[in-house]
Length: 426
Ligand SMILES: NC(=O)c1ccc[n+]([C@@H]2O[C@H](COP(=O)([O-])OP(=O)(O)OC[C@H]3O[C@@H](n4cnc5c(N)ncnc54)[C@H](O)[C@@H]3O)[C@@H](O)[C@H]2O)c1
Image (cartoon, rainbow, N blue to C red; front, side):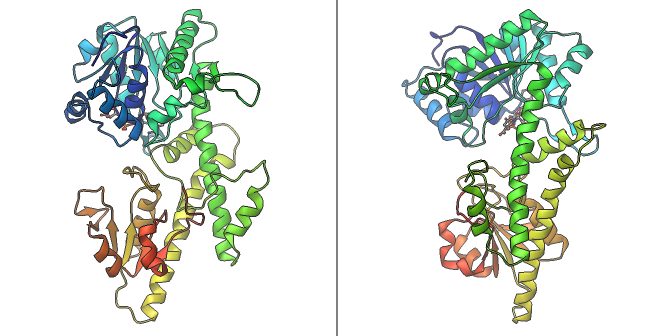
């Protein structure tokens, strides 16, 4: 891919949703090396194929392949070469929540920083992975390394590059008393803004400002922004889910109640569609991490946000069990529960930590046979359930079809479907 636009040299550790979308964004105007541990991902990228499903990333790579877009981008497993002479090393590796330690497992972030420092003492390390509040300052003093800053990432999976081309805001955290770190943070924010769509750079905001809001915050405040925004989103999902539980138990119309409250402009008619629970890679783990960060700080709500998701899945599984029991009373021998898609949203191919998985586990614990229809899953079995790819026989064989999100292809079996997708949208 072309090198003629190269300016700042940037390495990105991790080619997942965060790393790859940033690598694409930044490689429009800078020289970017994307690094991963997985050879198949690197091979795909070097063939201009995306290892993840994301229409904008796929478009960028396809256009670069055709010579229609200039991206200064390479993908490699060779960390020493990739990191040796870069100005910035962006860390976008996973931070899964570890229930044993009650904290994120940040070992991949530390491994990536160690690999950078092995060959490059001067690069500014920008952590884009989501980390516990206070992590960056602790790591800096542990490593005796002041050139580490943090920038929270706000993208959605499947729309990762689109969200970086159209960012709601850019936030970078650096210590206010370190002028060099503040300058590095501002320069990094400018690099992100430079890669954004020109419409966003010229947009008029409601508060009268122009362009993408850029916030340079203290490092720990920037870390808090990330966990608090995701925990707020988990709260909002849980709120409408518990509203739905109440309405179902009390035999009220949930959709009427939601419409009635959402017309209040302070509530708004969005992000209010009931589901089986909040899920995906980030909301469950980030809300647990925020709860862990609250140790010693008075709270009730944060614990409740974490607990509410479990209660909701218990309730959903009980509703499905009740349908199965009714079918048995009606004479159906061994009713089969079919799970339609493992994904959180329609159109997605990713089902990391999707809420339906918690429902499946609960149904299996109750001894209810479950079959899964998931066309993107190339396995025979999932969580001990048979996986089928034959949609027609799945529809005819299953007595109850459980769908976190409705799809029109279920219309002919609508009477068997159990969903709480009341507004038929994400
Ligand atoms: N997925 C999201 O929607 C999202 C949004 C905002 C923030 N985040 C945060 O960003 C981080 C990354 O998330 P993701 O969804 O992109 O993860 P991902 O699992 O999709 O990708 C991470 C990649 O990092 C690679 N990797 C692991 N260790 C490495 C190392 N030492 N060096 C180089 N590569 C390494 C993995 O092989 C993998 O390809 C997490 O902390 C996550 O919480 C994710």
